[in-house]
Image (cartoon, rainbow over all chains, first blue to last red):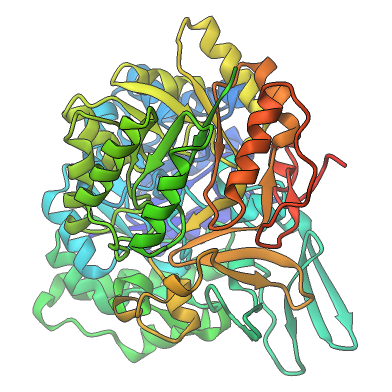
Length: 331
Length: 297
């Protein structure tokens, strides 16, 4: 299985490559990709340098252009596809049907990967994208249980990539408008969920409050760890109880499932986190490289080393990890 | 004149409530009725055959009936149910997921795309138009600016693809594999006791300052405020919108439809208070603002 690591900057890209990433993925410095953060992502010069660095060391580079262009953005998004193609990336990660069609016709020699934002959760949906746009690979949404992944993998007409580690989206990706309901930006439209521009922190007599476009997302008592106010991970009131009504602030970690994922024929495991620092990327990439190498060397006897587990827990939201929807009971 | 449509029921109602609702709807001034379970595969008060029976009854009453498919497809069982709708040729299909697109296209069944299909540009519409697309819904997070551009580009392309706009009701905003109703009751999803039946209009989720943010409805999350574009109807007509979608609620629906019908005919709507589940109004998406905002005063 291939290790696919995030690169939010050139130093992060180099770090990922140096620590064993088989492939890295990046986006341009605008809303054409689903991790639009201030100060993050690549201009053309940096991107070209990154491609050269990775290729010289035997790693591949994928470019994510996985938001949905509206009529007034169409030329810009098409331009992003052309720029990625011109740099010699190894694949373009796309979600929008119009853009997939454009890439397939204009740059047929560059493989197309279906982004998680393409919301394909069945082999029929994968066949739709394969038949229409000849995608080579698809990234599965983080909503399927392991049994369901097995069902999809069994009949899949394309390679599959699954999320292995990082922030946990619990909604079917590509179809979540919660962020644009509270702010004016969503992953689909602007490549942003719970955008930083809408976040406000405030010390109050009741505690530290986090707000998103003035909406109270969470309030922390003394000694409680405060996390970024991703709107689905706040504490809300439902029928008189206040709790994490949608999801706790935890991270996804599927390292325990590696043998099963391998047995299902999954082609690649993906690390989330283009918004993370190079230091974070170094630790995560190195740990997963070790795990995958161990899996390759002793497929029947794979065990997660305590040291790997500790490293990954230390890098997780609230120090907590879950295997999320892969485990049926999580649902 | 623009058409009115009754979207699929997003909530979990008993079989009797569903049949009662549509017995009334047969008399309402809506041209199109969408039928089917679009939220949760565990909601099986009505089997596919029950939906088809309802569809035939409503068709006999002169309604244009469309069969709506599940939004989040997770298993082979989900696909089997989906095929029942996408392999028949009596009715149009509303595809709410790419799986439905694939099956409908393979079987040459004409289809409409629902609001959860990501139609953000005309290039996407052109691809689907070649394969049986007969109409499309604007994604709920897009507003009049994008809609206007899409409709005018379609015209330039010479494509006649009627546009439908979700115009009244709680907005469907997200789908998860997790059930938030079961989570609230501390039950596993696979043994949820069908608690959604106790919440015919979902469960309110409020901030700790009592702001109505969302409505939890099984695996789906809806807006806490009710989207209401009634006063935008003249604008929508000018833009060339074909169909105005109203989303079913278990009380007050008849009066709401009557008002939309009055407004689309250029009459003044009734002004006596509506007997609805209490919720603030919103129209932000239409104006390119946060969806929860109410822009028109």
